[in-house]
Amino acid sequence: MLDCSDSDFETVLVKRKQPSGKKEKNQPLKKKPKIQVMGYAPITNNRIRTRSSPYTLCELIEKLTDEKVDVIKKMGFGSVLNYNINCMPTRLGYWLLSNYNPTSNVLNLGYTEVTITTSLVRDILGIPMGDIQLKELNKPTEKDQVVAEFRQQFQKIPTAGDVVDFIHSSTDTSRLFTLNFLVVFNTIMGETSQGGTVNMKFLTSLKMGVDITTFDWCSYLLTCLRRTKAGWNGKQHYNGPLVFLAV
Image (tube, rainbow, N blue to C red; front, side):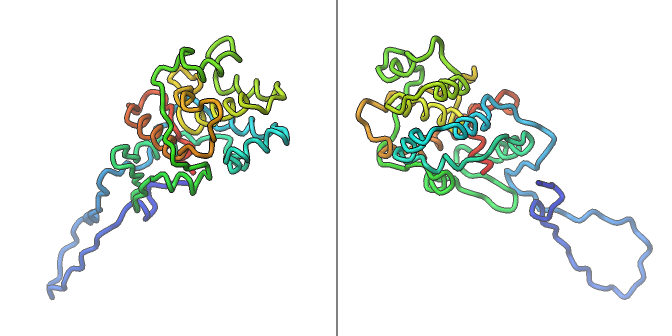
């Protein structure tokens, strides 16, 4: 549990006074000066609101068949099967996001700073960090072949929960399962829409026959983090990878 009074969050300077040889009258105690950490925001009672819950990803993982588990492992996302984060503390989330600088990619913890790199994303999440960068469509529509392929499964643009329900109701382990899994993962761990629907921006990169492991999924998550924090005003719902910052 985080506590703003912990010594990790502040350093106190004490100046030793030389004896003067004279007795001094009682004087009111002066407050000890504190070092202010530049750019650091202490934890408060402010709470963050999000558009997605990590519980949805846990719900997906818990009910996967052995065949689907094997497909996920071959995609290079086997580490995701060990995720067990059901909720996101809202005060902690607000504090973390307030101390992340999307320009420098630095998370300021008060007593230390953490530079968030693609290698750090790989080390923490264990997802593929290939050589190919994912391309995006800012406004994905069915004019794109892969977006249309994904959308044909649903009558409307789905939420992550809708896709999870569809995965569990289907025995499919082919390409559509791969697309569905990646949509859920990149919505919960990357970026969801401000309306709460799934992230389809990256789908344009996943043409038929591509090798999922050759893409840099770590760099993509970092792109989502920087973009969503830059667009967050501190009051609106946050739609980025808050779970990653927490872990």
